[in-house]
Image: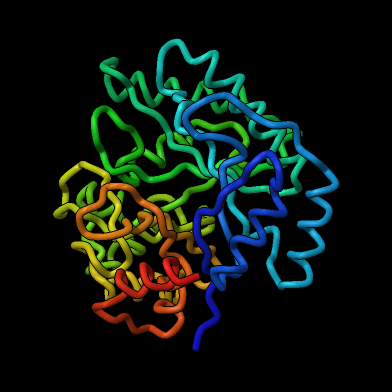
Length: 303
């Protein structure tokens, strides 16, 4: 069986920081993970505790987690596509410094939304912003995430992402993160993933692909909504997602789950339980059962 690099989004809090993130990933049976260095919705950031970072590094080394396969996600509030993007530029610069101080080198970024200015202006703003952020000394690869196309999002097809990359001065410091839910909602049929990868290779180049977010979708193809569903329980389906994960051309590329937490019961709206331990097990076994959600609820309610 092909070795896969599989993990999920994990937490990063001010008390345990990276050490807590690593421990959470290992509890899911993961061999990589992704995290935000602070809340994705605001600018609040704790000071990096390098003692915790050193402990985390030792644990990763002991557990076989390659730091080069770990992904950090930039906060949602960064919007380089906006005409007044000075805040986004400054905050992204600071976030890159945090990534570097933690010893990682891959940062996933939502390209941005043009907020009514038009796609051409928005894309030019993104290019201008990235060229103000990325320089010869930058140690981080900024990975543009493919988006679903809700609202005025940019980067919703390979051509738009390619245009951004072409405009960046330091092209060796820019890459791409595919998201299966976003691809589906943007109109790419995951059931024909060979064609998607062929198009990506021809338009952008596989050497630019550094990460894949593995999410099922609550939406039909081309819905432009971006609503993630648990692995195998959405419109993309288990078999199609498994083919993505084990695709021969994606070997060695980290796969990250961002699927929703599970509610306590069918009537509750509060999401309590992370599904990742069970989803990763199903992915490794290439087999899922219809009672997965109930298994997750039972596991956490009894633990």
